[in-house]
Length: 319
Image (cartoon, rainbow, N blue to C red; front, side):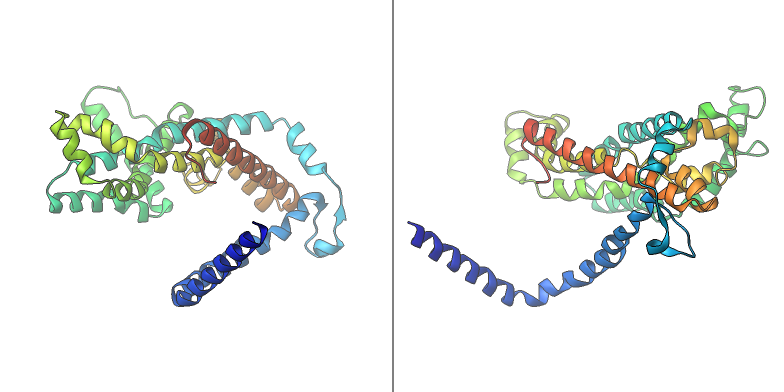
C-alpha cells in the first residue's frame, strides 16, 4: 500500500510538472504580479520594526533606539483611543451596511434588463464614478452643498424644507450620511461587476424550471439568482469584515478639508487620518507605524474569525 501511494504521488508530481511546462507561457503572465507584490507588499513589511523603536531618520533602522511596546501603550492609554475606535467602527459599519448590499441589488436589477443597449448604457453610467478621483468628488460635493448657490440648499429652500441655507459640510450630524452616500455612489457600479459575472454563469435551465413551476421574475431572483451567487456574496462579505478598521482615508481627509475642520473631527477622525496627522505631518513615524500595525493585526484576526464562522455556517470560505 505504501509503495503504491509513493508511486501515485510521484506520478501526480510528474503530471503536474509536465502540465506546468505546457502552460509555461500562460504561467509566466503571473510573474509581473508576483514581482509587484514582493516589492511593494512584502519587502516594506521589514519597516514594521520601527513601531518598536524611537525611529530617527538620520540614524536609520539599525541605529535607532529600541523601546519595545512604548508607542502601543501610549496609543491605547491615550485620551483619543476610544473616540478613534468609535468613529472608525461606526463609519465602517455604516459603509458595510449600505455599501455591501448595494452592488448585489444593482446586479440583480441589471439581470432583469432585457435590452442589451439599455443595459450597457446604464452599466457604463454606474461604472464611471469609480474612475473619478476623490479630489474631484469632494469638489463636486462641496459645490453642491455650498451655502452660497449650492444646489442642495437651493432645492431645499424652494421646496420650503429649510428657512435659510445650511452649511452641511460643517455640521457633524450630516457628515457620516454625506460620506456614506458618496462612497455608495462612487463604488456601487464597479463593485457590482463580480456579482454580474457570477449571475452570468448561472445555468439558464434553472430559470426555465422555476418558470415552469410558476415562479415570477421577481420570485426567481430569490429562488434561483441569490442562492446561486451565495458563495461570491459570502467571500466578499468576509473580505469586507476583515477590513472593518479601514473606514477610509481619501474621502474623509478631503471632506474634512485635509483634517483642518476641527468641528468634524469628533465624528470623522478615524485611525487612518490619525496616523496621517501624527505619523506623517508631525513626523512621529514610530508612533504612526505602531497604530498602523495594530490595525493590521486586528484585520488579520477578523479575517480568520469571519472565515471560520462562514465555514461553519455556510460551508463557503476563503480556505
